[in-house]
Image 1 (cartoon, rainbow, N blue to C red):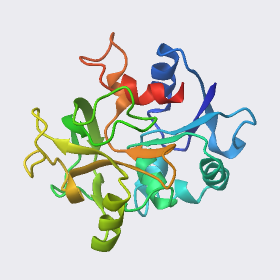
Image 2 (tube, helix red, strand yellow; image 1 turned 180 degrees about the vertical axis):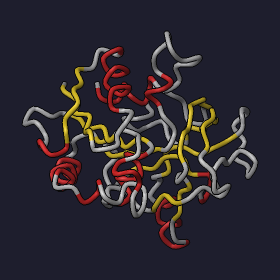
Image 3 (cartoon, one colour; image 1 turned 45 degrees about the vertical axis):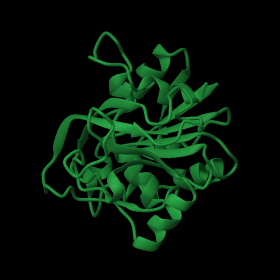
Image 4 (tube, rainbow, N blue to C red; image 1 turned 180 degrees about the horizontal axis):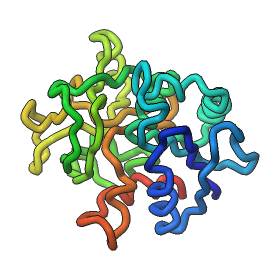
Length: 225
């Protein structure tokens, strides 16, 4: 399987994603966005960073790059697509998932470790975990607050498309455990197909035992197998 990690101007987690996937025995390569998707692409990562300096809105410029049309088509055909941090913002801006990511409630850039509760364990991204399991992953964002209209949020829950929620170390979903003010403590969501997912925390930064103090993110990346 070949996973394409799409590099935009301002991406800075593309190499991290490739290294983490390689560590797990998953063939991965970086691809400059202007070069389009390789024909042998079996999976896609939209990595973190600051594409186009977050001009206008985080992810707004990258979402309008021509390659995103190919990515939307691939996602519609069932190709696994994972958006991480800025990639999640790009995914929302390009309508791969519902909702939007806006300025943190603190109005500050936040770089810290957080806890996530696995809401579903029956998806490609979470079948390495148990429902209700608590993961520890890092965040690094200034526009990570998940926002969605009341009716759309009700639909999201009814369709069981909330993948992760911010929680405390014991798995309690509380306001205090919500680092950015996200609606419903949502940290990650699914698209219309379960093969498409976005999340704000960085699994690739919690995948390499030689550089991270935990490896809770490995299970998410193993979905590409």
